[in-house]
Image (cartoon, rainbow, N blue to C red):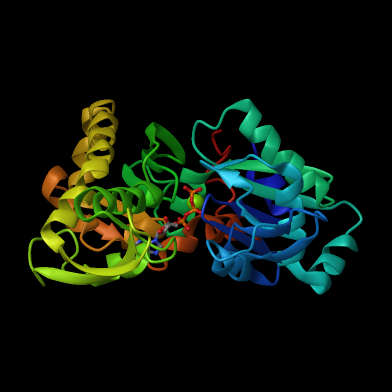
Length: 345
Ligand SMILES: Nc1ncnc2c1ncn2[C@@H]1O[C@H](COP(=O)(O)OP(=O)(O)OP(=O)(O)O)[C@@H](O)[C@H]1O
Ligand SMILES: [Mg+2]
């Protein structure tokens, strides 16, 4: 499936349906939605109770008859109907009315690199349900590279790493296309999972579902690097007794637990570099790796990459919204027409 820049310029809105967050860019209005991809549903009546930030806050705190669901999993829309309901609610009445007024509504969406036909179909169906008559799909890697201002259309190679919640995608780009790329199914969620498992095994402590991020913040500043406080106090629930309990957790051990899933990411980067022509690898010594995606903010991840690859590593400004901003640039026609034609898919 190939979406040309001309077709993208005709789109009225663009959606990045992520495993963790949903983002919508509306032409002329900018980024109008940036909320968690979550919906709270009343299982008795099927009614939607809350979406986005509000639904996310309810996670782990709801009575039996309310369920917090995530319609996007592993970067793929797994519940099309729920994704549509969530998007409708997130867009709000006013924005929906604005979009409905367009006689031939066109939408763009970014899909993970290597997304299978079913995943692409699901993305298209979701937006068709929102009223789009035509949907253009763009590779997340290209969208993110455009969004963080990488000179993708140049013959010099650039390397981008999209650190999402469900996956990490790495690519070497040159002349507006992907030279080699890899999608590693390890992202922010795997890091959170590693912390939860560590506390469960080592301290017999169950964490409230919302407190993994505070734990990461406790490690921050020094993050994955070996400095900083020796231990940090964590509150949770005892696995056996079910009672509330606090433990002092050794931060070095937590860092080790986080590093384990990240080795898969480093292996993936190695494979991309090995599959890349030598001339382009030589370019990367100057241009380095640009990190985007929410998990790029994981404290110390950039340092770890720098050590492993010996390449310069930069974190994009506002890394979390790069992909949707890239789609936005394409919609607004901010990309040189000759560059990036066609956008490889
Ligand atoms: N400051 C931070 N430190 C560490 N991790 C963070 C931070 N902010 C966000 N994250 C992590 O980033 C992830 C969300 O990133 P992003 O918004 O790019 O995901 P997504 O686009 O929804 O996922 P995907 O692209 O994999 O479908 C979450 O797993 C979250 O835990
Ligand atoms: Mg994403």
